[in-house]
Length: 211
Image 1: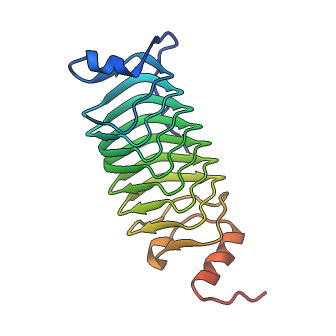
Image 2 (image 1 turned 90 degrees about the vertical axis):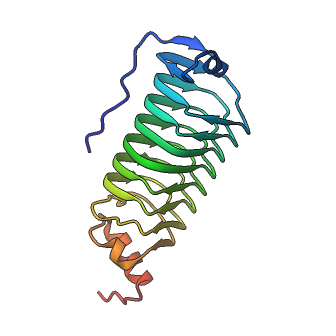
């Protein structure tokens, strides 16, 4: 699947996250934010554009009306972070901790979660397009009322994940693993699965597979 990567300069100015309070628009643009801590706080209209955020701790914070464009988060702790009404495009989360995080908003395009932990995360009421989860741990992750287009779960742990009012038509989960998986029969139609998963789903639906 072709995904548009963040457009980032190779020469970003290094700064701390509190730089954002010096900008009246609450924007970080064209910078590398490193080793910063902003925990248990609330910040409205956060904007991170064309920037890298590395080794930062935002756990327990709420970002309302956040706008993330051409951003890359690396080795960050975003556990229990709430991105409320967030617009996220051409953004990557690499080796990040997002346990219990909550994303709700309008649209997400060209997003990558790679080698990250999203156990107990909630993604709700989004339109997803060109979204890749790669080598992520997603135990008990909930998707609620989402629209998915060109979405891939590549070598992820999806055990006990739930897809509520979320169609998996065209979604590729064939390389991922799970023991139990909560989805309605009608929302499973058109999902791309492996032969092993086909047997698992047949069992969940009460079918008996006979060789």
